[in-house]
Length: 176
Image (spheres, rainbow, N blue to C red):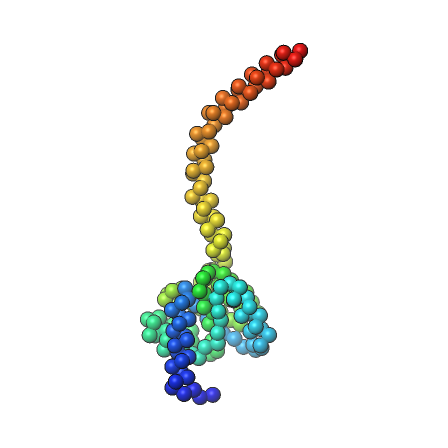
């Protein structure tokens, strides 16, 4: 299907918006894809805070070139691009899970404007999601403070334990 100049311009403008908004982009090659597979993948991608679209390689390549991104040979054959607007590791996990079927294959991607390989996309997918990373970081930051509080409170706790033991000893002696 041939596109007019206006249609191509509109498509490229949409691609530019997606590229500008996304923190990362992951490229898939698809074969034997049916609408059921695509709908299921789109639903999972939406849950991860992103979007996935079939792109025209030539037009998408022009947009990437204008954005200063070197895409190498990623835009060969059929291309499906996942745009991560919020949490790149979550979308990478969805993309990596989709590639386990024989319908999709990971080509690579971009983290910001940096080209990453399919193996790096898999490594990114193996990272914990953003909320888990935040909790781990918070735990690391709070550990020294909680240890300091326990250390400062320990002498007072010891004295309170001794006083309680003497008071209980006095009560048992007066009860006899």
